[in-house]
Amino acid sequence: EVVKPGAGHLSKMSEAKIIDGKKTAATIRGEVKEAVEEMKQKHNVIPGLATVLVGSRRDSATYVRFKKKAAKEVGFHSVDVTLPDTVSQEDLIKEVKKLADDKKVHGILVQLPLPKHIDEATVLAAIPDDKDVDGFSAFNIGNLCLKGGIPPLAIPCTPAGCVELIQRHQIETKGKTAVVLGRSNIVGMPMAHLLNSMDATVTVCHSRTQNIADHVKRADIVVAAIGKAEFVKGEWLKPGAVVIDVGINSVDDATKKRGYRLVGDCHFESCKKVASWITPVPGGVGPMTIAMLLRNTVGLARHHTGLPRQPLRASRSFKDVKDAQKEIGAGADVEKKEK
Image (cartoon, rainbow, N blue to C red):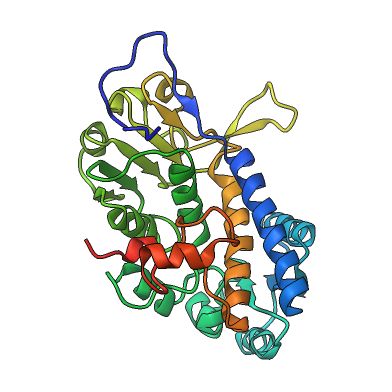
């Protein structure tokens, strides 16, 4: 059954259904693991993921550790490069180019942010388009935004994860009004283009937008990626709206052992009383980001091996790729269908 967001008022007793990112991510990791086994057995290829960590930021080191653990679980070939925060931009780019020349590496991830003396754009530009596992290159972003034509080789992981959550919970987007809070290159901008490709009418709000609450009130689907703790309030929402909360923020909480707790960009307790579906924080979008990183890696490995690519959303696993491509046109993504 397809869920139609924003369909009327909810009863006072009802609460939003939880979109379980942990469960969905586990399913995707299982699909990736099967795909890795198939590539290994049929083509003697093991998808390879390289991570580059510069410095000793605790949050960056934690993210990289999670990514390495997930890569190991699905059977990837992993390459880890750890450099001091004093490394020069020139030496960092040399390391990236070494990975670019390594035929066993299909995807390269440079953990951001980088130290202030290094220009992130220059470093990311050193990653070849066909090893851009984050989907951040101008080639991949440009093809994501174009209607028709060549599909991107990889799609930014967090927006792709949001799309998976929407699709796998059979939430209708066609003809719906969507509001994306935030316009970053990593989340907001690609998310808006993906929703547009899914036939939603999209508004992007940002730090200069006036009366954000008024925009949110009209939305059937709200994607919050603005980086402000509990910014979106339940009274802002249209009854029955779907809420995808990308934010992760820490707020002081003396009742917790760590002295703080994690919250999203939406006030969960008030929003769940108005929404029809909502992602929790933690346990919503977060786990999906790493799951989609793994999936992107397999996609790039397939590309390097000359195998058909897996369109986003068209197929639940890598097994039925050819059938999916016949359905939507050779080599095209779902979002590339002509409207």
